[in-house]
Image 1 (cartoon, helix red, strand yellow):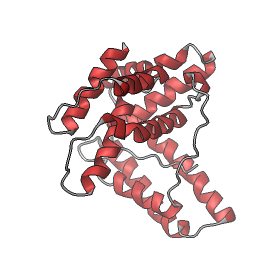
Image 2 (image 1 turned 180 degrees about the vertical axis):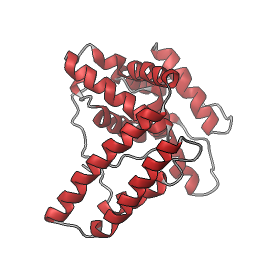
Image 3 (image 1 turned 120 degrees about the horizontal axis):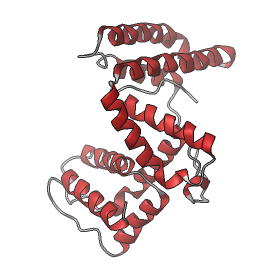
Length: 230
C-alpha cells in the first residue's frame, strides 16, 4: 500500500475513534506513520494499537482533547511485536534491527480464567459440532484451573503442555467452522499482511507464516482466545 494511502486509512480510523473529530496526520506525524508502513505494520494491527491506547484513555474519564496519532505509537509497535511473534515473522524479515521485547506474561491461572470467559460465548449461533467442541474445551480448562494457581515445576509444565494440545483442538474446530468463501477471504488478507516480508523469507518459513497468519485471522473472526502459554 502506498504510504500516503496508509496514512489516510490511519487518519480515517483515528477520526472514528475521536467521534468524528479529524486530526490531520502531517509533518513529523506523517513521517512517523510512513515509518510504520515501511516496517510492514499491517493496517489492522495499527488499528489494534490505536484501540489499546484509546481504551486506556477513555477509561480515565471524560476525555479533554482528541487523541493524536503520536500518542498511539508505543501501543501500535507493541501490537506489531505481538503479531510478528504470533505468525513467526522476525524483526529482520521486516527490515528492522531492533530487538523484540519479551512479551508481558499474564499469570497462568489468570490466563486460564480469561480464556474460559472468552470461550463461553464463542459457540453462540454456531454449528452443533463447534458448540460441542467449545463445551468440551471449557470443561477441561475448568479442571485445569485449580491446579494452575501457584503451579510450579512438573505440574506447571504439564498444564502448559496440555494447553498447547487443547489449542490445536480448538484451532481445528475453528477451521472446520469457516466456510470456503470466508476462508478464501481470510487467506487473501493473510497474504496481504505478509506481503512486506515475503520476499525476505525462505519459502518454508513464508509458508508457515502464511498459515499462522491465516489461523490467527480465523481465530479473531470467531472471537477465540489463544490457549497456548509460552
